[in-house]
Length: 157
Image (cartoon, rainbow, N blue to C red; front, side):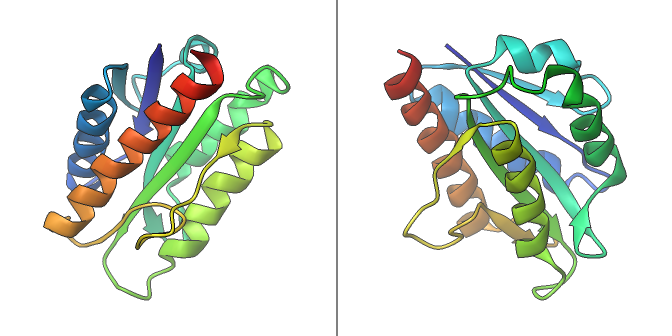
């Protein structure tokens, strides 16, 4: 089973989060494929059992590079249904639009028919970091990877 993690990172903060997500997937014994969005192909979406997207928050929304990837994914509309999804973000401010970014990423996944599981513990919609991810943000990223891997195994194993 394979979980695809696609991210965009200008400063390296979102990349650090993506690496922690990858660790969480691997902890559960699944293959984690980590790609910056410039290296990801739309075919990667089809090959994955789960898809986790990470983006910095710019003006309360995802980076244009991630948005373009999502927009191009219309090529596979209807073919991602049932895959497990998750999202994470970083920003420069606590009130910088993190939740709106997460919800935009999750909305795209829901439109694809994907399954997204929240959490009752902090960062309900997905992990958030303000500036460089601290230990709590990295632990939440690891937990996201673990949660998506576990649900993918239940649904597709």
